[in-house]
Image (cartoon, rainbow, N blue to C red):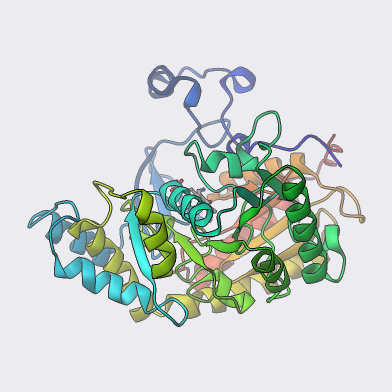
Length: 447
Ligand code: PMP
């Protein structure tokens, strides 16, 4: 291993200790207001003022191509979403304890995107809330108390879900009822990723049992975003899910990142030929308007509701429904799932061809508009997080915003809006080539 594992929020973050506190009044106010919980991108944080499509503009008028943010997924400030939210908030915005046809129209449309059979949807405001209720419903349905996650997973910030999010741990290990297995990479499992990953999950089921916890669920982000983006071979999740079900547990597909077209399909789990027991969704669901959902089978939700009622003041308001419905409309009418597939394929080819000529770029992989690029220090693929950090900053200087993922933070996360044009994709490839050229000094060995 080439260094200590990194906490996800530390990646490419401003650090007033290491970076100093520049003489910037806004930054000083920020630090006073947010205190220790402040997390800002870049050692020289950027003040943003506006955004449109795939571009953001800062206070100095500099425009940046957004290759990081997967929330405004149909494009920043999309006129259709803006108009839908504005019209509805001017008419009625109230909690879901009144009937409203827009909310039902939205949920009818959303449910129709899920695999066959009946679904109910619980609406909330954040991915964390969706996963929180998913884990509780899984435990209630199965009678189990154990959860299986991947080693660098992030599923949210509530008291329950943070325990299933090893990527957020600054120290220590997950609690006894959670077992983390290595992410499904070829590096860990070799050629048989499906078999190796299933075996690791079987081992986790046994480890949980030995600690007195029957497995309740395997929860996985179906493209393993924070683990470093692992998409192939499609179908590799199947045997692991079978193993969990055979042991009495269920499968929760966390679609907070891969959902809503990003992988070139509506849902990331579709690439695995799976029908999950629970699907959680958030981030791009309202293109920036806070809306999330937990979809499950009616019998699972009924069992959960026998003990506990669920109500969410801001979940499922008519305004949330207007935002969500306009996102579904835009995805369909602008062909964004197909665009993710097409532009993702173009980017993957271009980046792979850069990587074949540059030993600092290792494995390049992904699906649709979600691509991971490993930065490495040798031909054995030794992770080089320092090079990833330099490249992120060199790209910022070339007007491209991008982030890192992976256990060590050495994987560049290519994740632009789904409305990306070919000219914008080419802008990125040119910037990447120029940024690599600018990093002529040998990259220090991580560790
Ligand atoms: N699941 C995944 C896969 C995520 O990436 C995130 C957020 N990064 C969450 C859940 C939590 O979502 P939220 O921040 O909206 O609570």
